[in-house]
Length: 128
Image (cartoon, rainbow, N blue to C red):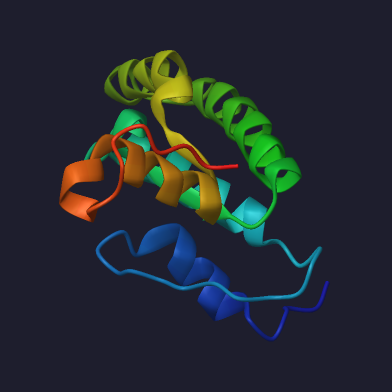
């Protein structure tokens, strides 16, 4: 099998947890797979909790798929995890609904709803 032109970049996404990445690619090229793998790696290694994670995508369909795939990959990772990693992964499964996995519009709406005074908007603000 031939390596992809971006194999090095894909590897960095999965292993460089101290680096912030912006991933831009065409549909069907593996963005969701890379992001899910990164989130599972962060949880497994210990420095991050799923309840404090934000993953933003463009469509509700993509966000729903991401959440489903994240659950599946966390469950898979539990199979060969150390006891410490397994405890972190178990906690992540419990926190899955607390993670902000959604669209940019939903994320911004949540922020505005949580902090309407600071944003200078009506406290009963709702997004349509």
